[in-house]
Image 1: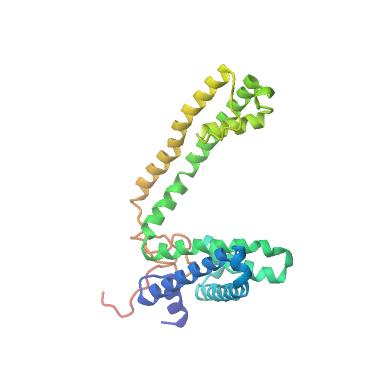
Image 2: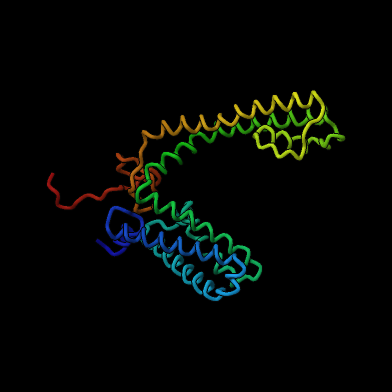
Length: 274
């Protein structure tokens, strides 16, 4: 097997001892880099160990940059990987550190380094939790339209109740405008209840009671939508095979070709008897 294919299997697959060892080492590096990012925000520790944190951050950023380049090298279509979700996450794992040197005003981008935590989910997804992750992602994707319609319905209720409360309560009770009344409707409908604005008239309190009761029912709607889609998605359990051409993941167990580019997932064994 060519070196390029061997490296691709180690980096993108998790079925071999070398692949598992690479994933474990990657998790350790990601978690260690996150620890450095977190404690670097503590002023006393930064004042005492700031130079050490700086060296460690550059070491991790260089390591992640090398890994990113190797991933691009071992995939037949590097542009597909670079434009994928995890490719962008991998890029932002080290890019802010290098930008902070080239541009003085980009120091605030250092906070983007916390995106490295998403890479932990990527590794876990490849090792043990691939099926569970695919079920959740598939359910959220399939329920996105229903949830969008639900959110627009909630927005309509917020506008209606906000306008009504603006007319009922008025400026003297804190409802100084329709947008501020809509803010009260959002807080009440979601059962948060900050209490900074509250109705004082009997009619306003009656309307608020209706909004509160509706809030309990509204909260359960998206949960039911996602639950139904998750039940349906359980039938489409994904495997850990990664396409060697475009790095697509999340194929079905019975899949023989990539759902994105159509490449063959499993290579035939040369010389195998028919």
